[in-house]
Image 1 (cartoon, helix red, strand yellow):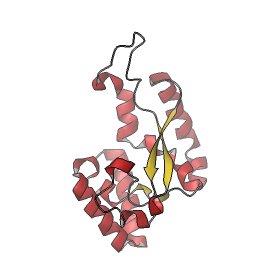
Image 2 (spheres, rainbow, N blue to C red; image 1 turned 45 degrees about the vertical axis):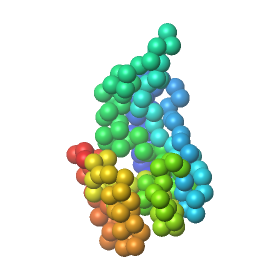
Image 3 (cartoon, rainbow, N blue to C red; image 1 turned 135 degrees about the vertical axis):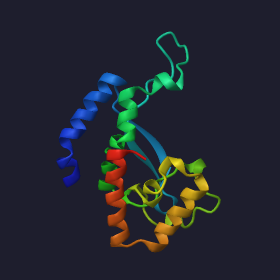
Image 4 (cartoon, rainbow, N blue to C red; image 1 turned 135 degrees about the horizontal axis):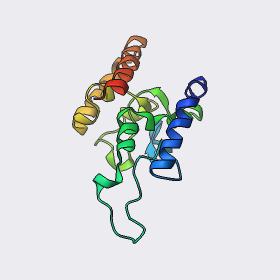
Length: 166
């Protein structure tokens, strides 16, 4: 709740940018699996335009993601609405990223033992640059080695990734 209050000016700024860039609604949501396989909706700021133009013609991926959308994604500002997921108990600040139901590893039992997080060990050790298998191995390492010091490392690296990129 304190982070939401502290980030309120940034939330307003990102909301205005999203509204100008891609229009309403400001948020999108996807079903993900959380602790014990419980399904929930994860929220993010929208960064993609509609897949079709006003004539009903498909729009290319390059045109759907604008410069503003790229910036919002690269700085991870699109993840701020997930603080609401923390408030309702679906997520934690740190943990394995929640995956789509069809993206779960062959044996998801380990990763589903703890609440998913907004940021995690896999995100700060490769993020989108590592394979699905490598992410799973990093997530399992985190689950088995979680501590205050590891969480602090993740928080510091998350800030570094948000400012400097992956």
